[in-house]
Length: 323
Ligand code: TXA
Ligand code: MG
Image (cartoon, rainbow, N blue to C red; front, side):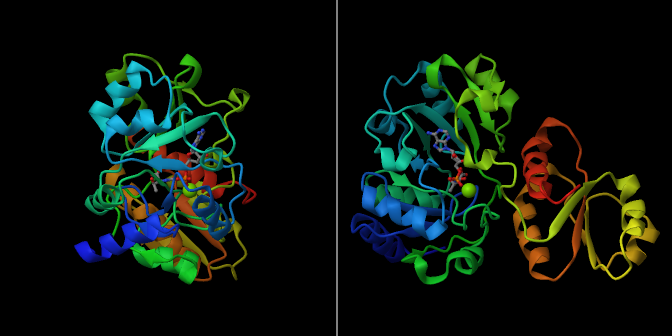
């Protein structure tokens, strides 16, 4: 954990228009003063992210929602009371949030992170911090400070070290704009938990909604190595179909039969619970991506709701890999 003095320095950098990477409970964020469009534009150039992709504004107190959004519905207050601080981002009608932050859209994403370093940074800085995940555009989100360094190097002014992220997957995103509650990105807070508190149904995000979600791009969260999702019972067959010269890694969470063990170049056991699996997923993909495998086979996780964020990210990571 960084010392108080490091957080103090980071808050001063933010005030001076700098860019600071900081830990949250989900993934590391790349932050800038949300009210300073020039500082915000540095985030886009560091990440290589197209300027029409909106950023989340992180706030330290739910009462600050009105500073960034307008016509905040009662449901937003109810969700904030139950889930903030925590891995939930709410998309609301834009108030005074600059268009540079919202990617030109008339809506703004707000989140209060559940991490002592992020919260202390927000407290000392005093304003909203616009922050996407601290990775290059389209790549795997960082869940450790070393990942941020690998991804962005010295293009970032300061990296606050908060160790590993507890959740490991990006926040759940819901839109409450236009009275059309929508789940835009699954995360650790599930749709049924949200619906139980909000008392309404969240429809799934359809491309017809006109809402841009960069995590919604099919090729997002992708390792460079080809990745295939495969049910446990078919892994042996999939390996046998590959050329013998191909180096294959297998990520599995149940028992793998001996034939797979013998034929794969590397076998990587994953945790069996959804929360531990989610926490380990990105670090594992990053690790395997750095070794020169030709293919990563991931055992298909269960389909129940607690695994929905994991299945979403794995589906996106495997997209475009040709199978
Ligand atoms: O857990 C998280 O949400 C992390 C940590 C750092 O807070 N942040 C994160 O940011 O994942 P990013 O930019 O990598 O993903 C945020 C997603 C993007 O897909 C973006 O399109 C969507 O939120 N988003 C933000 N503002 C939006 C808006 N006004 N309308 C629709 N989508 C929005
Ligand atoms: Mg991201």
